[in-house]
Image 1 (cartoon, helix red, strand yellow):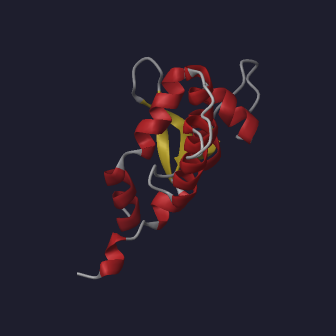
Image 2 (cartoon, helix red, strand yellow):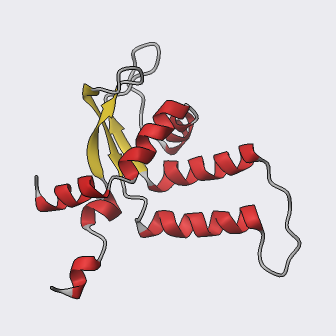
Length: 135
């Protein structure tokens, strides 16, 4: 076995498309997709390490208190920037296309069910391996 087979796949680093799930039925929604990178992707891991320093403080320095809400915001920001990379098929309430800008991704991730869906996709190692194999 080649040692290189243990490296992260292209899909894990650059993302793969998943069919978005209906918030209530958890069934795939036709024509609505999200491009999600793996939790294991290097950019996300580095961001979490940096954010952990903000949460826990730098060793040797006095730690500052950080609220649960602030912690959630830090994680959501990292997910918006490094895991949820793009989407197709989402609309505003008025029916106009909802562009996948960083600001819109952050706002969407404030909805707990949406955040949970993206996080589940990001931790699905089998889906990323399947994508790499071309299935």
